[in-house]
Image 1: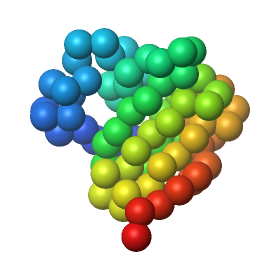
Image 2 (image 1 turned 180 degrees about the horizontal axis):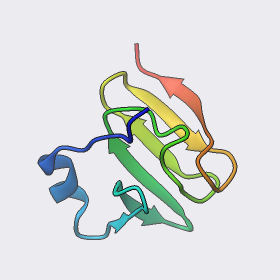
Image 3 (image 1 turned 30 degrees about the vertical axis):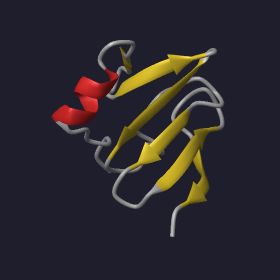
Amino acid sequence: MAAPTQTDANKAAMAINSVVTSEGVYMTPLAGVLIGSGTGTPNGEVTAPIGSLFIELGSHELWMNTDASTTWEIVGTQS
């Protein structure tokens, strides 16, 4: 499974206050958690603090990190 990809526009919008995970995913810190976006699942691919959020832009899924490592769970979708 490949790590989520982010467009140059996504990266530019997040660049001001972003951090880059060890997997190269740009995420914005907010009160001890990270918020990121990209195309592709973060599950098993992106390391972040527990409670961090990831918006999957292709399927419109919202993921939350559940173990402060690479385990993510879908918490919502847009239909």
